[in-house]
Length: 200
Length: 257
Image (cartoon, rainbow over all chains, first blue to last red):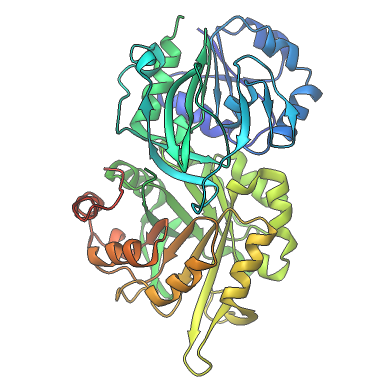
Protein backbone atom coordinates (compact mmCIF):
# COMPACT_ATOMS: atom_id res chain seq x y z
CA UNK A 1 0.00 0.00 0.00
CA UNK A 2 1.47 3.34 -0.93
CA UNK A 3 0.68 6.55 0.84
CA UNK A 4 1.83 9.69 -0.92
CA UNK A 5 2.11 13.01 0.90
CA UNK A 6 1.58 15.60 -1.81
CA UNK A 7 4.51 18.03 -1.74
CA UNK A 8 2.54 21.26 -1.69
CA UNK A 9 5.56 23.37 -0.81
CA UNK A 10 4.14 24.05 2.65
CA UNK A 11 5.90 23.71 5.93
CA UNK A 12 4.37 20.83 7.90
CA UNK A 13 5.33 18.02 5.54
CA UNK A 14 7.97 16.46 7.75
CA UNK A 15 5.79 16.42 10.86
CA UNK A 16 3.08 14.62 8.86
CA UNK A 17 5.68 12.24 7.44
CA UNK A 18 6.97 11.47 10.96
CA UNK A 19 3.44 10.86 12.25
CA UNK A 20 2.90 8.11 9.67
CA UNK A 21 6.36 6.75 10.38
CA UNK A 22 5.31 6.32 14.02
CA UNK A 23 2.40 4.24 12.69
CA UNK A 24 4.83 2.06 10.76
CA UNK A 25 4.10 3.59 7.34
CA UNK A 26 6.90 4.94 5.20
CA UNK A 27 5.08 7.56 3.15
CA UNK A 28 6.45 9.01 -0.06
CA UNK A 29 6.65 12.78 -0.30
CA UNK A 30 6.19 13.71 -3.93
CA UNK A 31 5.04 16.31 -6.44
CA UNK A 32 5.44 13.92 -9.36
CA UNK A 33 2.14 13.48 -11.21
CA UNK A 34 2.72 9.79 -11.99
CA UNK A 35 3.65 8.97 -8.39
CA UNK A 36 0.55 10.81 -7.18
CA UNK A 37 -1.74 9.09 -9.70
CA UNK A 38 -0.41 5.66 -8.73
CA UNK A 39 -0.70 6.15 -4.97
CA UNK A 40 -3.24 4.06 -3.11
CA UNK A 41 -4.06 7.03 -0.89
CA UNK A 42 -3.13 10.70 -0.80
CA UNK A 43 -2.47 13.18 1.95
CA UNK A 44 -2.58 16.93 1.35
CA UNK A 45 -0.73 18.79 4.13
CA UNK A 46 -0.63 22.52 4.48
CA UNK A 47 0.07 25.45 6.73
CA UNK A 48 0.22 29.07 5.69
CA UNK A 49 -2.17 30.99 3.46
CA UNK A 50 -4.65 29.59 0.92
CA UNK A 51 -3.71 31.86 -1.98
CA UNK A 52 -0.03 30.94 -1.77
CA UNK A 53 -0.86 27.24 -1.41
CA UNK A 54 -3.14 27.26 -4.49
CA UNK A 55 -0.43 29.12 -6.41
CA UNK A 56 2.03 26.39 -5.40
CA UNK A 57 -0.37 23.68 -6.66
CA UNK A 58 -0.86 25.53 -9.93
CA UNK A 59 2.84 26.05 -10.43
CA UNK A 60 3.40 22.34 -9.80
CA UNK A 61 0.59 21.46 -12.22
CA UNK A 62 -1.15 19.47 -9.47
CA UNK A 63 -4.65 20.91 -9.59
CA UNK A 64 -6.26 18.67 -12.23
CA UNK A 65 -4.53 15.57 -10.83
CA UNK A 66 -5.92 16.22 -7.36
CA UNK A 67 -9.37 17.08 -8.70
CA UNK A 68 -9.47 13.80 -10.63
CA UNK A 69 -8.00 11.66 -7.85
CA UNK A 70 -10.03 8.50 -7.30
CA UNK A 71 -8.16 7.19 -4.26
CA UNK A 72 -8.95 8.17 -0.64
CA UNK A 73 -7.55 11.61 0.09
CA UNK A 74 -7.11 13.38 3.42
CA UNK A 75 -6.41 17.11 3.69
CA UNK A 76 -4.97 18.49 6.92
CA UNK A 77 -5.53 22.05 8.18
CA UNK A 78 -4.93 24.33 5.20
CA UNK A 79 -4.86 21.12 3.13
CA UNK A 80 -8.47 20.51 4.22
CA UNK A 81 -9.46 24.06 3.32
CA UNK A 82 -7.98 23.58 -0.15
CA UNK A 83 -10.45 20.73 -0.78
CA UNK A 84 -13.43 23.11 -0.56
CA UNK A 85 -14.83 25.42 -3.25
CA UNK A 86 -13.36 28.71 -2.23
CA UNK A 87 -11.36 30.52 0.45
CA UNK A 88 -11.85 34.05 1.64
CA UNK A 89 -8.18 34.04 2.68
CA UNK A 90 -6.75 35.73 -0.40
CA UNK A 91 -10.12 35.29 -2.13
CA UNK A 92 -9.10 32.27 -4.13
CA UNK A 93 -10.85 29.31 -5.81
CA UNK A 94 -9.91 25.99 -4.27
CA UNK A 95 -10.12 22.40 -5.54
CA UNK A 96 -13.90 21.99 -5.21
CA UNK A 97 -13.75 18.38 -4.01
CA UNK A 98 -15.94 19.01 -0.96
CA UNK A 99 -18.65 21.69 -0.98
CA UNK A 100 -17.90 24.58 1.36
CA UNK A 101 -16.51 28.06 1.75
CA UNK A 102 -13.57 29.02 3.96
CA UNK A 103 -14.20 32.21 5.91
CA UNK A 104 -12.40 34.18 8.60
CA UNK A 105 -13.55 32.95 12.01
CA UNK A 106 -15.99 35.18 13.86
CA UNK A 107 -14.93 34.90 17.48
CA UNK A 108 -15.99 38.13 19.15
CA UNK A 109 -13.58 38.99 21.96
CA UNK A 110 -11.68 35.72 21.75
CA UNK A 111 -8.13 35.61 20.47
CA UNK A 112 -7.09 34.66 16.95
CA UNK A 113 -5.45 32.49 15.76
CA UNK A 114 -7.51 29.76 17.39
CA UNK A 115 -4.45 28.01 18.77
CA UNK A 116 -4.41 25.05 21.11
CA UNK A 117 -6.33 21.96 22.17
CA UNK A 118 -10.09 21.95 21.74
CA UNK A 119 -12.81 19.30 21.89
CA UNK A 120 -14.55 17.51 19.03
CA UNK A 121 -18.25 16.92 18.73
CA UNK A 122 -19.08 14.14 16.28
CA UNK A 123 -22.22 14.78 14.21
CA UNK A 124 -25.13 12.39 14.77
CA UNK A 125 -25.00 11.46 11.09
CA UNK A 126 -21.28 10.56 11.35
CA UNK A 127 -21.33 8.37 14.47
CA UNK A 128 -20.36 5.33 12.41
CA UNK A 129 -18.04 7.08 9.98
CA UNK A 130 -14.88 4.98 9.59
CA UNK A 131 -12.57 8.03 9.83
CA UNK A 132 -13.87 8.74 13.34
CA UNK A 133 -13.85 5.21 14.70
CA UNK A 134 -12.78 5.30 18.36
CA UNK A 135 -12.91 9.09 18.48
CA UNK A 136 -15.60 10.63 20.62
CA UNK A 137 -16.98 13.50 22.61
CA UNK A 138 -14.50 15.24 24.86
CA UNK A 139 -11.49 14.15 22.83
CA UNK A 140 -9.05 17.04 22.52
CA UNK A 141 -7.17 17.76 19.30
CA UNK A 142 -4.72 20.51 18.35
CA UNK A 143 -5.87 23.43 16.21
CA UNK A 144 -3.97 26.38 14.73
CA UNK A 145 -5.99 28.51 12.32
CA UNK A 146 -7.86 31.78 11.80
CA UNK A 147 -10.07 30.67 8.90
CA UNK A 148 -12.66 27.89 8.98
CA UNK A 149 -15.53 26.17 7.15
CA UNK A 150 -19.05 26.57 8.57
CA UNK A 151 -20.86 23.36 9.58
CA UNK A 152 -22.89 21.80 6.74
CA UNK A 153 -24.04 18.37 5.58
CA UNK A 154 -20.43 17.47 4.75
CA UNK A 155 -19.40 18.02 8.39
CA UNK A 156 -18.40 14.84 10.24
CA UNK A 157 -17.35 16.53 13.49
CA UNK A 158 -17.52 20.09 14.68
CA UNK A 159 -15.72 22.25 17.19
CA UNK A 160 -16.66 25.51 18.89
CA UNK A 161 -14.58 28.65 19.23
CA UNK A 162 -16.73 31.75 19.28
CA UNK A 163 -19.08 29.82 17.00
CA UNK A 164 -19.33 26.29 15.62
CA UNK A 165 -17.11 25.36 12.70
CA UNK A 166 -16.31 22.14 10.81
CA UNK A 167 -13.43 20.22 12.42
CA UNK A 168 -13.68 17.15 10.17
CA UNK A 169 -15.37 17.08 6.75
CA UNK A 170 -15.95 14.41 4.16
CA UNK A 171 -17.63 13.62 0.88
CA UNK A 172 -17.17 10.08 -0.41
CA UNK A 173 -13.50 9.25 -0.04
CA UNK A 174 -12.38 12.90 0.09
CA UNK A 175 -11.75 13.79 3.73
CA UNK A 176 -10.37 16.71 5.67
CA UNK A 177 -9.38 17.65 9.22
CA UNK A 178 -9.07 21.27 10.29
CA UNK A 179 -6.90 20.27 13.24
CA UNK A 180 -3.43 18.74 13.08
CA UNK A 181 -3.74 14.97 13.68
CA UNK A 182 0.05 14.72 13.44
CA UNK A 183 0.26 16.91 16.54
CA UNK A 184 -2.82 15.69 18.40
CA UNK A 185 -1.37 12.88 20.49
CA UNK A 186 -3.16 9.53 20.61
CA UNK A 187 -6.44 10.93 19.24
CA UNK A 188 -4.70 12.29 16.16
CA UNK A 189 -2.81 9.05 15.63
CA UNK A 190 -6.15 7.24 15.76
CA UNK A 191 -7.56 9.42 12.98
CA UNK A 192 -4.50 8.82 10.79
CA UNK A 193 -4.77 5.08 11.47
CA UNK A 194 -8.45 5.21 10.49
CA UNK A 195 -7.51 6.97 7.27
CA UNK A 196 -4.99 4.24 6.46
CA UNK A 197 -7.78 1.67 6.86
CA UNK A 198 -10.38 3.75 5.01
CA UNK A 199 -12.01 1.90 2.10
CA UNK A 200 -15.08 4.05 1.48
CA UNK B 1 -13.82 24.68 24.86
CA UNK B 2 -10.28 25.69 24.13
CA UNK B 3 -8.00 24.33 26.85
CA UNK B 4 -5.38 26.33 28.74
CA UNK B 5 -1.96 24.99 27.80
CA UNK B 6 0.78 23.66 30.09
CA UNK B 7 4.11 24.20 28.35
CA UNK B 8 7.42 22.87 29.61
CA UNK B 9 10.33 24.90 28.29
CA UNK B 10 13.60 23.15 27.65
CA UNK B 11 16.59 25.46 27.49
CA UNK B 12 19.10 23.90 25.14
CA UNK B 13 22.83 24.46 25.09
CA UNK B 14 25.08 22.31 22.88
CA UNK B 15 22.35 19.70 22.46
CA UNK B 16 21.72 19.33 26.21
CA UNK B 17 18.84 20.65 28.31
CA UNK B 18 20.07 23.14 30.92
CA UNK B 19 18.53 25.44 33.50
CA UNK B 20 19.89 28.44 35.36
CA UNK B 21 18.59 30.82 38.00
CA UNK B 22 17.52 34.21 36.69
CA UNK B 23 19.18 33.34 33.38
CA UNK B 24 22.53 32.50 35.02
CA UNK B 25 24.61 29.54 36.24
CA UNK B 26 23.29 26.96 33.81
CA UNK B 27 23.35 23.35 34.94
CA UNK B 28 22.81 20.34 32.67
CA UNK B 29 19.44 18.61 33.16
CA UNK B 30 19.67 15.88 30.50
CA UNK B 31 19.41 14.85 26.84
CA UNK B 32 16.76 16.52 24.70
CA UNK B 33 14.94 13.69 22.96
CA UNK B 34 14.16 11.45 25.97
CA UNK B 35 13.07 14.49 27.99
CA UNK B 36 10.81 15.71 25.16
CA UNK B 37 9.27 12.28 24.79
CA UNK B 38 8.69 11.95 28.53
CA UNK B 39 6.93 15.32 28.70
CA UNK B 40 4.67 14.45 25.77
CA UNK B 41 3.73 11.18 27.47
CA UNK B 42 3.04 12.92 30.79
CA UNK B 43 0.48 15.22 29.15
CA UNK B 44 2.37 18.39 28.27
CA UNK B 45 0.27 20.32 25.76
CA UNK B 46 3.18 21.79 23.88
CA UNK B 47 6.96 22.10 24.22
CA UNK B 48 9.31 25.01 23.71
CA UNK B 49 12.99 24.44 22.97
CA UNK B 50 15.03 27.53 23.56
CA UNK B 51 18.58 27.44 22.25
CA UNK B 52 20.13 29.84 24.75
CA UNK B 53 23.56 29.92 23.12
CA UNK B 54 22.34 30.90 19.70
CA UNK B 55 21.25 34.50 19.87
CA UNK B 56 24.05 35.72 22.07
CA UNK B 57 27.22 34.33 20.53
CA UNK B 58 26.40 34.82 16.85
CA UNK B 59 27.61 31.43 15.55
CA UNK B 60 25.68 29.01 13.39
CA UNK B 61 24.18 26.42 15.71
CA UNK B 62 23.61 22.76 14.87
CA UNK B 63 19.84 22.27 14.90
CA UNK B 64 19.69 18.63 13.82
CA UNK B 65 18.06 17.83 17.16
CA UNK B 66 14.89 19.48 15.83
CA UNK B 67 14.44 16.63 13.38
CA UNK B 68 15.04 14.05 16.09
CA UNK B 69 12.32 15.64 18.23
CA UNK B 70 9.86 15.78 15.32
CA UNK B 71 10.32 12.05 14.83
CA UNK B 72 9.37 11.07 18.35
CA UNK B 73 6.79 13.52 19.72
CA UNK B 74 3.14 13.89 18.71
CA UNK B 75 2.35 17.26 20.31
CA UNK B 76 3.23 20.68 18.92
CA UNK B 77 6.61 22.21 19.58
CA UNK B 78 8.29 25.53 19.08
CA UNK B 79 11.98 26.29 18.58
CA UNK B 80 13.53 29.53 19.78
CA UNK B 81 16.98 31.00 19.64
CA UNK B 82 19.20 32.32 16.88
CA UNK B 83 16.52 32.65 14.19
CA UNK B 84 17.58 35.79 12.32
CA UNK B 85 16.11 35.30 8.86
CA UNK B 86 13.35 33.67 6.82
CA UNK B 87 15.92 31.08 5.73
CA UNK B 88 16.81 30.19 9.35
CA UNK B 89 13.13 29.80 10.18
CA UNK B 90 12.37 27.79 7.04
CA UNK B 91 15.06 25.26 7.91
CA UNK B 92 13.66 24.67 11.38
CA UNK B 93 10.06 24.40 10.15
CA UNK B 94 11.18 21.97 7.43
CA UNK B 95 12.79 19.81 10.11
CA UNK B 96 9.37 19.49 11.70
CA UNK B 97 8.95 22.29 14.24
CA UNK B 98 5.43 23.75 14.32
CA UNK B 99 6.42 27.25 15.32
CA UNK B 100 9.49 29.39 15.59
CA UNK B 101 10.01 31.95 18.32
CA UNK B 102 12.03 35.08 17.77
CA UNK B 103 13.31 37.48 20.41
CA UNK B 104 16.55 39.51 20.06
CA UNK B 105 16.70 39.43 16.22
CA UNK B 106 13.20 40.95 16.07
CA UNK B 107 14.38 43.78 18.30
CA UNK B 108 17.36 44.35 16.04
CA UNK B 109 15.20 44.28 12.89
CA UNK B 110 11.44 44.40 13.58
CA UNK B 111 10.49 43.86 9.91
CA UNK B 112 11.74 40.28 10.33
CA UNK B 113 8.37 39.58 12.00
CA UNK B 114 6.45 40.61 8.86
CA UNK B 115 8.80 38.63 6.64
CA UNK B 116 8.19 35.51 8.72
CA UNK B 117 4.44 36.05 8.70
CA UNK B 118 4.34 36.46 4.91
CA UNK B 119 6.49 33.39 4.34
CA UNK B 120 4.99 30.90 6.79
CA UNK B 121 1.74 32.37 8.13
CA UNK B 122 0.95 34.10 11.39
CA UNK B 123 0.39 30.79 13.21
CA UNK B 124 4.11 29.93 12.99
CA UNK B 125 5.39 33.22 14.34
CA UNK B 126 5.89 33.43 18.09
CA UNK B 127 7.55 36.48 19.60
CA UNK B 128 9.41 36.08 22.89
CA UNK B 129 9.68 39.16 25.05
CA UNK B 130 12.05 39.38 28.03
CA UNK B 131 10.58 42.03 30.28
CA UNK B 132 12.21 43.48 33.40
CA UNK B 133 10.42 45.69 35.90
CA UNK B 134 12.71 48.58 36.75
CA UNK B 135 11.75 49.59 40.29
CA UNK B 136 13.41 53.00 40.01
CA UNK B 137 11.54 54.15 36.93
CA UNK B 138 8.45 52.02 37.62
CA UNK B 139 8.56 50.84 33.99
CA UNK B 140 8.50 47.47 32.30
CA UNK B 141 11.52 47.39 29.98
CA UNK B 142 12.35 44.97 27.18
CA UNK B 143 15.79 43.34 27.41
CA UNK B 144 17.77 41.52 24.75
CA UNK B 145 20.54 38.89 24.59
CA UNK B 146 19.32 37.47 27.87
CA UNK B 147 20.89 34.07 27.07
CA UNK B 148 24.29 35.49 27.97
CA UNK B 149 24.66 37.58 31.12
CA UNK B 150 27.66 39.51 29.81
CA UNK B 151 25.71 40.73 26.77
CA UNK B 152 22.26 41.22 28.32
CA UNK B 153 21.15 44.77 27.76
CA UNK B 154 18.16 47.01 28.08
CA UNK B 155 16.52 48.08 24.81
CA UNK B 156 14.78 51.34 23.98
CA UNK B 157 11.41 49.59 24.16
CA UNK B 158 8.94 49.62 26.99
CA UNK B 159 7.19 46.26 27.13
CA UNK B 160 3.65 47.44 26.42
CA UNK B 161 4.75 49.37 23.32
CA UNK B 162 6.76 46.44 21.96
CA UNK B 163 3.89 44.04 22.65
CA UNK B 164 1.58 46.21 20.54
CA UNK B 165 4.18 46.67 17.81
CA UNK B 166 4.88 42.98 17.32
CA UNK B 167 1.15 42.31 16.88
CA UNK B 168 0.95 44.98 14.18
CA UNK B 169 3.88 43.32 12.43
CA UNK B 170 2.24 39.87 12.37
CA UNK B 171 3.04 37.96 15.57
CA UNK B 172 0.73 34.98 16.06
CA UNK B 173 1.53 34.38 19.71
CA UNK B 174 3.51 36.11 22.45
CA UNK B 175 5.57 34.53 25.21
CA UNK B 176 6.12 37.09 27.94
CA UNK B 177 9.04 36.20 30.16
CA UNK B 178 8.93 38.23 33.36
CA UNK B 179 12.63 38.37 34.22
CA UNK B 180 12.27 39.50 37.84
CA UNK B 181 10.42 36.26 38.56
CA UNK B 182 12.40 33.86 36.39
CA UNK B 183 13.84 30.86 38.18
CA UNK B 184 12.91 31.97 41.70
CA UNK B 185 9.61 30.03 41.85
CA UNK B 186 7.60 32.69 43.69
CA UNK B 187 4.70 32.75 41.23
CA UNK B 188 4.00 34.38 37.88
CA UNK B 189 4.01 38.18 37.62
CA UNK B 190 0.24 38.57 37.73
CA UNK B 191 0.28 42.37 37.76
CA UNK B 192 2.36 42.58 34.63
CA UNK B 193 0.55 39.77 32.84
CA UNK B 194 -2.86 41.34 33.51
CA UNK B 195 -1.61 44.61 32.06
CA UNK B 196 -0.20 42.95 28.94
CA UNK B 197 -3.22 40.67 28.50
CA UNK B 198 -5.45 43.68 27.95
CA UNK B 199 -3.26 44.77 25.05
CA UNK B 200 -2.71 41.31 23.57
CA UNK B 201 -5.18 40.13 20.91
CA UNK B 202 -3.22 36.99 20.04
CA UNK B 203 -2.54 34.06 22.37
CA UNK B 204 -0.40 35.07 25.37
CA UNK B 205 1.87 32.65 27.21
CA UNK B 206 3.10 33.44 30.73
CA UNK B 207 6.72 32.63 31.56
CA UNK B 208 8.85 33.02 34.65
CA UNK B 209 8.10 32.27 38.28
CA UNK B 210 6.16 29.01 38.48
CA UNK B 211 6.96 27.26 41.77
CA UNK B 212 3.74 25.61 42.90
CA UNK B 213 0.54 24.25 41.36
CA UNK B 214 -1.40 27.19 42.81
CA UNK B 215 0.72 29.55 40.67
CA UNK B 216 -0.70 27.97 37.50
CA UNK B 217 -4.27 28.31 38.77
CA UNK B 218 -3.58 31.95 39.68
CA UNK B 219 -2.15 32.89 36.30
CA UNK B 220 -5.03 31.29 34.38
CA UNK B 221 -7.74 32.68 36.66
CA UNK B 222 -6.31 36.14 37.28
CA UNK B 223 -4.33 36.97 34.14
CA UNK B 224 -6.43 34.99 31.60
CA UNK B 225 -3.36 33.76 29.75
CA UNK B 226 -3.70 31.04 27.11
CA UNK B 227 -0.78 29.01 28.35
CA UNK B 228 1.71 28.82 31.19
CA UNK B 229 5.33 27.99 30.52
CA UNK B 230 7.71 26.63 33.13
CA UNK B 231 11.01 24.82 33.27
CA UNK B 232 12.65 23.94 36.58
CA UNK B 233 9.51 22.80 38.41
CA UNK B 234 9.03 20.21 35.68
CA UNK B 235 12.69 19.28 35.14
CA UNK B 236 13.32 18.82 38.85
CA UNK B 237 10.12 16.85 39.38
CA UNK B 238 8.73 19.43 41.83
CA UNK B 239 5.41 19.44 39.94
CA UNK B 240 4.43 16.30 38.01
CA UNK B 241 2.29 17.30 35.02
CA UNK B 242 -0.51 14.73 35.64
CA UNK B 243 -0.93 16.03 39.22
CA UNK B 244 -0.91 19.63 38.01
CA UNK B 245 -3.62 18.89 35.45
CA UNK B 246 -5.77 17.07 38.00
CA UNK B 247 -5.40 20.04 40.36
CA UNK B 248 -6.41 22.53 37.65
CA UNK B 249 -9.35 20.39 36.53
CA UNK B 250 -10.58 20.35 40.12
CA UNK B 251 -10.45 24.12 40.01
CA UNK B 252 -12.86 23.91 37.02
CA UNK B 253 -10.28 25.27 34.62
CA UNK B 254 -10.49 24.10 31.01
CA UNK B 255 -7.62 21.66 30.74
CA UNK B 256 -6.89 18.73 28.42
CA UNK B 257 -6.84 15.76 30.83
